[in-house]
Amino acid sequence: MASGSGSNFEALVGACRNGPLAATVCQLVVNNPGCGAAQRAERLGVPCTIHDHRLFNSREALDQALIASFQAANVDLVVMAGWMRIVTQALIDAYPQRLVNIHPSLLPSFRGARAIEQALAAGVQLSGCTAHLVSLEVDTGPILVQAAVPVLASDTADSLAARIHAQEHRILPLAVQLAAERLELLYG
Ligand code: GAR
Image (cartoon, rainbow, N blue to C red):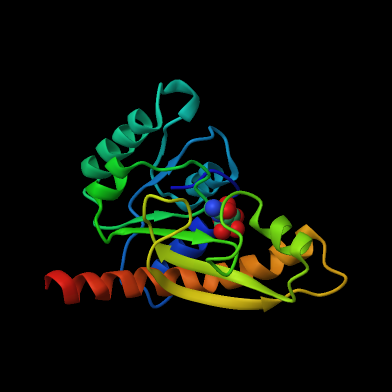
């Protein structure tokens, strides 16, 4: 699931194709037609489905459409790789223990939108990123992997975002691996 540039989506595809992750990214869903993630999917040959949130009456209706897509593609695990919509219990219940989010802060600090700007405004000297299982409250849920990055006095939102992104690309495949191992432990 992606809304923006899709660099985390591409990192996951790379980890599956060239790296250590024994998985396949079988489908991308985007809510913004023409977004960078959709363009990357085309280049990478990953099927991409558009569910434009503007065409749905409710968050629940959007999530039901997502669930239908995932079920049609027979997916085992779902990753919110820069998904900028609030998800509902319907999606969480459809993929219990199988819905992973990546967020650009050291949760529980700086939840919600513009986490990088929030960190800069707070003047923290350390920020980072968190991959976690999704609970209903935004940017909460059991933490799978975190990475810390220093915040430099000279940082702008862009420079800090670049440093955080590099770590996101590293930890998101690790988080998927951990989530899969956790499922194995829970359900065999
Ligand atoms: C990532 O930094 C991700 O952590 C963030 O959106 C960016 C997407 O980048 N997600 C959130 O803020 C969710 N609360 P990408 O499109 O290049 O992968």
